[in-house]
Image (cartoon, rainbow, N blue to C red; front, top):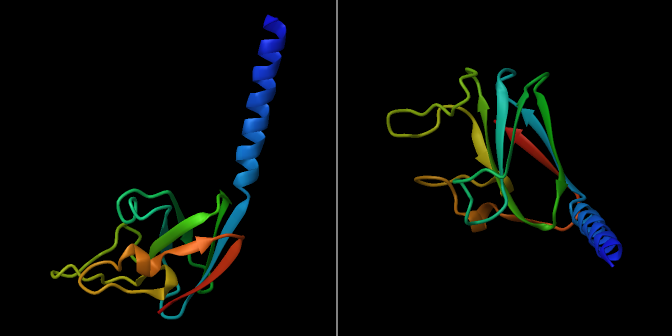
Length: 141
């Protein structure tokens, strides 16, 4: 009886793991083009919920700019609602530099090509539904 119980639990665990992996099959590809500066890195934060937006990063990436281009790929994502924010780190200090009013001095942006007024845009403005793998083309000016 113990043998059957252990076998069942191992089989159930294997099926649960397989199902969880099948749910995480989507990909987001971000193709980035810079028009002004051909230097630095793009730092990007991906958020997986309104609750975590601009508070807790779900996934992040840092990629160099080469020939005015950069590419970021996030694999193994589930269907759901996501948003991202990014900036071009021109001086390679890994933080977005701002002026004395707190306005960014380095190029930045959000998903859906939104910009905030007096702070970042609201999650509802930048959120997108991921139902299938998708490609986003971003131009940083």
